[in-house]
Length: 234
Image 1: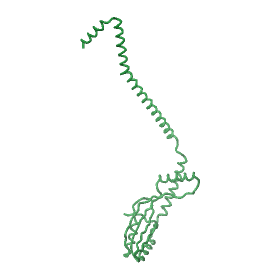
Image 2: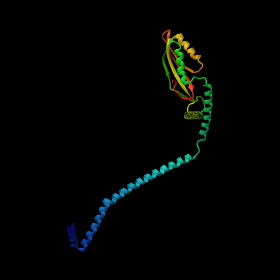
Image 3: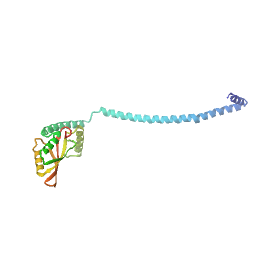
Image 4: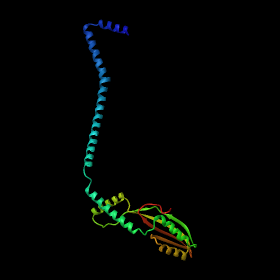
């Protein structure tokens, strides 16, 4: 390495002053060109890319900050008075309906007892055979009705129904299906015995098939109401 430098120095010293000056300028220009081509240009491109990313992130941050400021402004405002008033009215209506339902359902048979009672009454008649006793899922009940009116009233009613659903059902409907087979007269006696029970329940439907008369197949659907969900059997 030192030998090469010495040869280069000897060669340079052998040049005239003018040639030495031109050679030095050429070397400086070559260094500048190499630096600009391989180092400076790459640095400028990278710096431009970084600045573009910074500008993009700054815009996104500003947009998010604007959204946050808007949400904070909304949170500081009072809730909609009309909605609060409607909820208060509905709460009062629900309380009144709950009391009415509680008073009117005092004579209703409980969901848990209904299946047992209907089965026990059926077993008292030896000429009747129980084929199926199936309890259905409790169905929540909400307030129905309302006077027809303008679109604004319809929208208000729809909002009220949504609030009612959020507040919960007023009561639960507990269905029960009973299928049995036997003589026609005995089946009629069974239905009359159900009507004479000290408890009350609702008749939903009855289907009679007499393919093998006087023996008949009867499917009976009844239901009762309660303030709590729960399985009919037990």
